[in-house]
Image 1: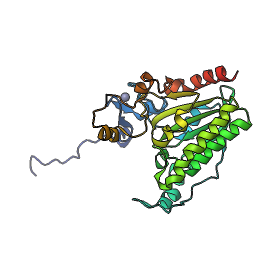
Image 2: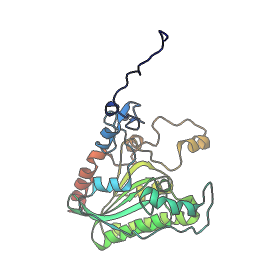
Image 3: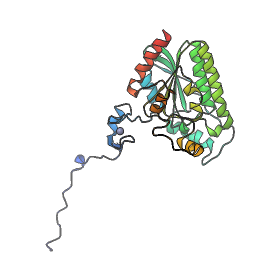
Length: 279
Ligand SMILES: [Zn+2]
């Protein structure tokens, strides 16, 4: 028997005392501090240290903004593949697999209900469905929400979270910009309010149409809002862009949005605005 051979097994912590920490913590995209995921969930997916607003799903958004008891509309609409578009992946394949993966049939969810007791039609965009891009079904659903608001004397709230028009549907996507804008003109004639909520990101054909047409355009803090991305603009104008360019705060300073509202205050802010606009 040698002196150096360890005969007993090394001491190990009993199983029940081992704590699995993997996946419970993330590094904040804003302040780079470690963040406990539960803290983030309990704070509407906003960093408690630096107020970085993480993206949330369409249904999370609806539950934050609407009073309980909302009903969903237009659940059967889904995109076809009119151009038989193929890039890295065939558009048809994405359309087939995404509803199960993301839990929505298209990049926008329409609900009817109330916000602080006032009648509202709300369309919330879903970024996880092809970057919240606007194809013909997204255009049709938002148009229907507007028409429903007109029929029911309701206000309209659209929460944008989108990379822009959906390239897989080409010109058909671009036509939605005009279609939605003309429906909004009818809403305006009826003197019903439209509150546009811009979240990170709101770009391309969405920012160039309905997202900027609200009676009130409200942004979440730090959201990227613009038409073309900063890199494309820098290459075109051959100039360095200022810090914070295309962020909510920059847009507020330059008069492009009316207010920046923290996620936890958004419902109260919309309620207050609608009470002022509708009564
Ligand atoms: Zn943070």
